[in-house]
Image (cartoon, rainbow, N blue to C red; front, side):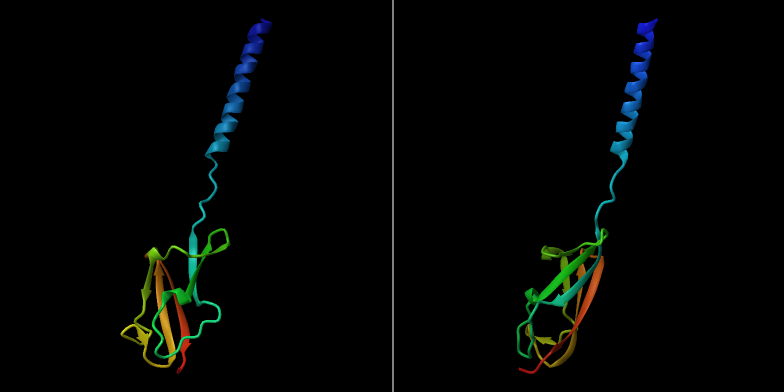
Length: 119
């Protein structure tokens, strides 16, 4: 009788531990994703009339759902809308405020207004 009690108690313990392990395994942490992006001129960058457009002069940062910020280094997912830059043959053609728009991964958008100065 004592052996049956120990066997039943052991089976109950194994089931309880198994259930606890399975419950712990099904709890998934939320996946960290991009929440928004921002674009800014790289530090100490001045753009003048006649300068050639160069996307490396712009830094793109992503804010993630966990609140952290990271620099976007994979530029293959970035579309630069240069229509607001007043470019002629790839060079800034006039001074004044211009706007660069970007789209990252086809769903995150940002824009940057900056001033092109006379050379």
